[in-house]
Length: 489
Image (tube, rainbow, N blue to C red; front, side, top):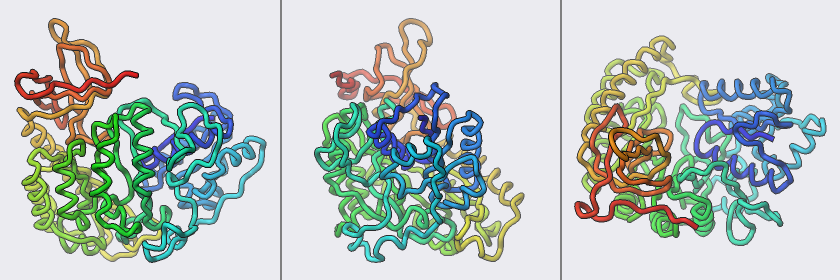
């Protein structure tokens, strides 16, 4: 069978759980280049319209191969029977099918039509009070299950210890680690909580054990993912639990870097900022969900803050760690957004000096409050605003990258390129602590010595090209150790 993953890093974790369960059930996973498969399982994304269209296109393309096609993931969970009716080429499985995914596919391959679930609000499956959730029996939460399966194949997390069933699908130096699922926020534009459910954290010991397993299987950087990482621990009785977890993860043998994603500005506590900027092995990288800079627009989004408060937060971070990487996403064309409020966002971006900026045009999402708000803008107007602001964002990100020339950073080497220049000069692709995987720029390292994927190399930034950096390893006599070679078993 072939497993296709679309969407975010959270989906990557879910796919690795599905892969582990399937192999444990006797299924053989085809590699990326092996196109012939009896079953194609597509872990879909249902976040925004473009992601939905990509998921449907992938499902239709898989159906042309003649294989049995199965839709799982967010799009499948969100629409259930509605998706199955609109797309008869695919069978639709929800999150509650994950625990017996091998059995489901056995039956589908045998010719059975599995009944798709009826869509429901998964927030209602867990108690309203976060304190009551760890002991509650709600629906299945992907990425949170223990592994009560004996005789697991090689490469799958064992059943001993508090570990999640999982099989790495790649050999890269970076691995996502899901620390929580769901969200209790009620942003008026977002449908994710309705199909991902209420917020629930994974226990710290379970995460530390899985981090060790990931390190044993090649991971040098852990990317902590969730719908809202700043809420971690609130259902376990400790709002400061992430502050205690980060040093434990950074201390796991084999782990060089721990990176946190999906931080809510309104929940970012001073203590957490201090831990993220002062703990060895924890990257001073802040993935902050600002969404806009106008206080009025943010209130309509059911969010908090404004441009001045966000600038103060950025100043607080850079006061502790001037080299910190900061990224954020913004929605343009939200219902009622005025030209003056758009200009407010432009001014904020110019002052914030963010390393990475994502600009998205507003679109109605089924079941959200924003879809019924007055002041809906014409799609062409939204498109124009996106084009203008995205152009500004590109210019500002390029300027920020240029500001980093001369800085000293550690680069995690992720790929080797061909030789370049005169003499034995080797080229490598990697990322500094201020560059997150997939979504930010990269760093090209040119070195006179051979390096390996997974090495952590100390460099001086020598130039920039757009959002990307160029760097050379620095001499050990100039500034401490030049690089940490990857351990070889």
